[in-house]
Length: 313
Ligand code: G3H
Ligand code: 13P
Ligand code: ZN
Image (cartoon, rainbow, N blue to C red):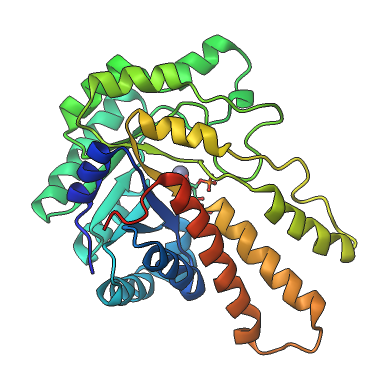
């Protein structure tokens, strides 16, 4: 069934759990994610980036997501991830996304406020929810100094001003997570003090964690094993994700939507690589992509368990 993003996130905020938001780029990833949510009896958000739309087409992705949502036995939200191009955001609002993100985080503050406000007006007029972003989502090691880090992470007082002025429905915050498979070289500690302050000032606003993949050792190990056999094993060297304990801590302080893309990519690729190497006679795409779909389901179920959204439909 199609889920209402505002109701689901408000319920998650009250219940101190998070809803998994998974990036989908093709049919197999979408099916793996939906099967995981159904197996766990968890509400779920399926989201497409502008890159996914460029790859597969908005109409095609929306048709697949709507069909999957309609058939699913759990609530499914259809969300635009990191909308930066206003034409794409407007098209998403008109075409059937139930929620959109406008990412104005790289704009000067006043411009981020103005554009987010505009998107909120368009979206709310069409019954669509809006996620906005304040602060640059980068790993701690991407900053040259503590002062630079402080300037880039979400400022709690500014977050209050931002949400009040834009009326966005949820807010993506920068507290030390980073996109991709290499989030840090050392131990990862999120800025939970900052998160607590943001949550104290905005107790009713669902907060969103981007760049939150866990990059599990066993999956990285699986891709390593098979890429060693190919004689090319450098791509994931030093890969490191957000420890589950840090993710759980963030959920205790207002984080109610958690994005995962990298973990799905690693699981999918490890499975494809394994099939190609284990059985060199395979040339049927279904035999190649079927195990990848199963691998996506397995990792998505693991994420849902960490988010504590099992049985929350
Ligand atoms: O936050 C970014 C997501 O991982 C989407 O990545 O723009 O390559 O589709 P993408
Ligand atoms: P990861 O790269 O950590 O999976 O983050 C995905 C994300 O934030 C999508 O918006
Ligand atoms: Zn993101």
